[in-house]
Image 1 (cartoon, one colour):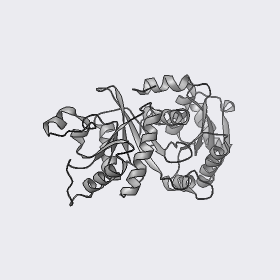
Image 2 (cartoon, one colour):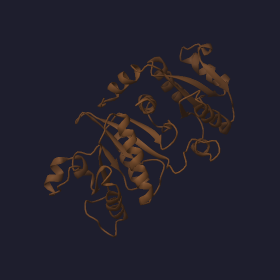
Image 3 (tube, helix red, strand yellow):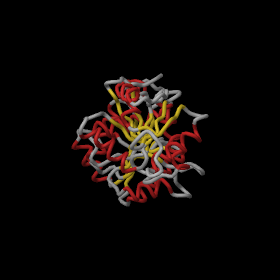
Image 4 (cartoon, helix red, strand yellow):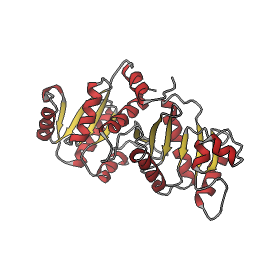
Length: 299
């Protein structure tokens, strides 16, 4: 089933036979907890709340919930909290770890620990943002906007592979992948264009991929025609691979804050999807991140 909206995604997840469990590390945070409770109330997932038990219970009461109805693990230490969440995923007693009120560096150390973490040998951790594009009636994936700062060609190939898996969970079986840069021709002075062409050359026999593309001709058929670009990807991209983290970060935050687009973010390349949202994300977008990660475990 090809998913074209978060509403459709929610209906699909709710119709799945078994509910997945989210292990929330440092759940004593009102914004995180509100998004988790939204997922629980909607029947999207169950949750185990790891953190300062007294604060978690106080927040639950604040939201009109009975703490006795929730699985709560008392753990005040940040690293111990994420280690517990990761251990539960490894053991199969939870399905998805989620970051609560804790330092990102501590969360990532727990996720990536070589002995006890979730990164498989030979894999690369990368982030993907998923946007609902109402004008086209489709979902758009943008990667990597949060983890790999200046990925090299090998890393970009892995980022593409991880993004394709996200597309697969959305029911996009043969996604069209556009390698973005500042312009659509290779310029030796712009490393992003050189990398885009190299990644395309390496992966063109495996995926529908092309590049470099400027943003306009990756998402607009008219713009591509105007520039004389003849490519099956031009104007029809399902996945946009950005040249570096900061361009992706600025781009996606612009879509959220200026265009007010519905979005989700997920970490990929691990044993399971991981929910690590921005502190400035809305409750709804945090919920969509949970929803997208749950989808990634069932499709």
